[in-house]
Length: 619
Image (cartoon, rainbow, N blue to C red; front, side, top):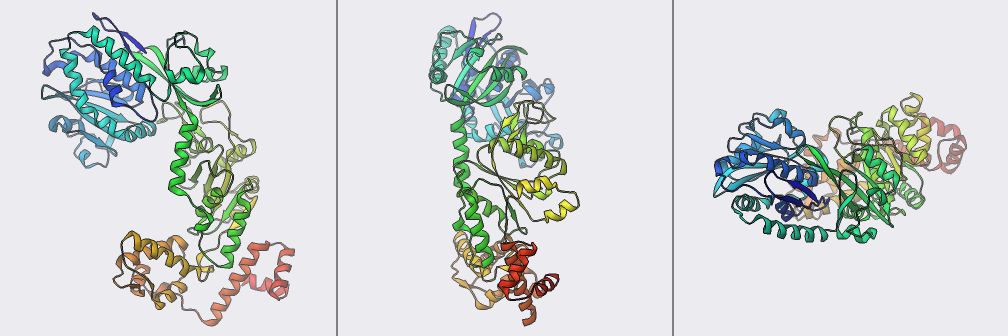
């Protein structure tokens, strides 16, 4: 509950809900139900109630974490929150979405401001820092008197705005009613009493906990949800220190009660506690705490991940000896909670193996989180892995952000292209694996984590260790169970098995009546070396599916995609024999290792001398 007094008017109590999963448009409508002086005319109404508008948008910002600004008919920015405050008094850019909204009276929801066609003519386009933007026209008596803009400058606010897009878009009609009601309502006292009762009912129906604290951190208001979960009595004015553990209170206090902490266990329930200050005329008048059920949040993420990327060992197709051996190794190790290192060329399906291992493990009901160590800028890799606290660096979220280790603390973390991990980060990664705890960037409190690590690389890590570009101690920590994924060129008839599978898939996707390949086409596919492995084969079959006009895929479209016949292998019998020997020997080395004892065993199995084996290895 926010208690505020407008000069010359009676005291106002506004109840706020800071939900993380759904923002009810009626709630925002009720927040905005505040008294305005009767008699303002449309032309100057927004400027005349500037102080009250500021109070309103600060309240909404505290709830939603989305920055809000309001401009009048002349595009003059009257009020704003957070990073937009510095523009108060200035005019919104010409040809901006604000300008277009004011001119046309239409809403604009822009998910990517710098690239959206509506922003092309904006004079401030090059310097725009907004990630997502919603502009709503403010109407009164059929006239457009201004624009309310909701702007997201960080990923959390962006997700909020996008996930609740429909609720915010539906807000336009309510906004016109609000302005009209504010100006015409005579009996403010009776309306306020009704609205207050309505809001109490609303927050008690919300499936998240809400606490309102004063500046002494005394609990002023709690809703039904948190009362039931923590067995509190609403009329007890206890201190928040009597409710949360001392270490949690300390974390909130250190962050000036403007952050997110958790998960926190209270009365056998786990919560994420989000804390936001209530600011009135730039002075803190209290604090809002939102208690979100951590298990529900976690299960929501897991359901999304499972439904989108459920892959099992049945999805690993092929009959070649090398693939079957790698698949059997993966099946055997899946239930054993050890680190796995997947080795193989780019495009061989290392992530498919990783997902299949996760799906067959005891952690299958927890999250699987892939992260490409080579795709993240070096200056961001630590915050991506370990998270960061509020204000740790320029552009950091105002509430901090958990890292991948924290999110998958009981799941599986897939570190793809581990060989591209910066050397200094290798030290920190090793510590996290050894100690099973991490510290966020800018933080001081260790967080316990225990994800299963599956890593992968197409690089020769042994060579990198010799060159001192990869730490030997980290290699041995990751390389508990190495599994080599064979390249497609060493898998023989698997090329045809996979080609037919992809053809069936894409024929269904593109609604094509294709029953297979011509014999000549299959021969061409078998002869091609596929440097891009399965990924290249998949793209090749998709291309051929799209452009094939006959019932069987022939060589023409395959050759068109490959560029010319120059990539086709025209091998002599001796060359093919040599390639086969190479494949057999490599498969044996993967199976038994490369030690002297292993090589002697391989030589015996192949019926050749150890000297012959070494000669063939050199060749």
